[in-house]
Length: 267
Image (cartoon, rainbow, N blue to C red; front, side, top):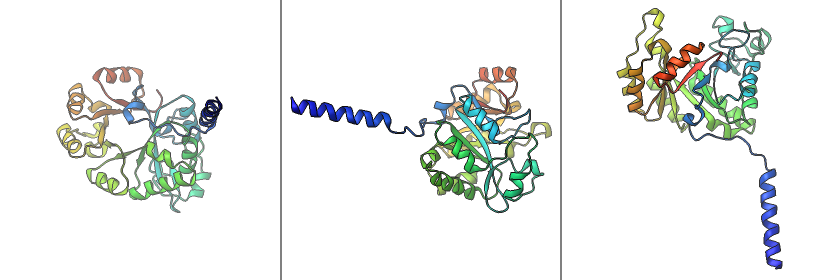
């Protein structure tokens, strides 16, 4: 009886500790597990009607709304601080200092956000983070993100990062830095804009995806996406992401085509 009581006491103690212990970040096994809603919040989501916000308020809204996948743009300032911005759109593509970035209000009047602040907000969520960077120092951006995660005691969150690459050679660079589980191939730099006569060579992209098995998604301008293209990539085990999609009718149409997800600022 004493032994039974002692065992029962131990079991109760272990269960109590487990219940009281901080749960930390919950990780989905793959990006597909987080794409049930078929929506990726683009650049933290629009703010005050403006796209590419990448601001603190839009990120907080996305978290409050229960979004599961978010894309954020990252750039290094002239003094080496990693911040959330799309090629410094707010400053005419000029690489500015961190002080200037902080103190000059962006177009949408949101709060400029550092990568450190973004990780602080995200680290206790289960949100997948798609990293987009126009910075030429590609690996340095990811090294800074990893360093921030370590400093913020959020190293486990780094596993929730999905890199977005633009060229095939970037895949090899990224693999040499870290063993990421999957990648998104963002096609727009190679296709060009539909408005400027761009063209999507689906065969070419399918071959790239077949060569690199960790490329699980390929992203195209929405006007390039066809039902046939979606089927072609599905045969390769690759999902198609369409962007930018901010109208409900476009979202419904693309869902019927079978896209894996859309990138949206406002839906």
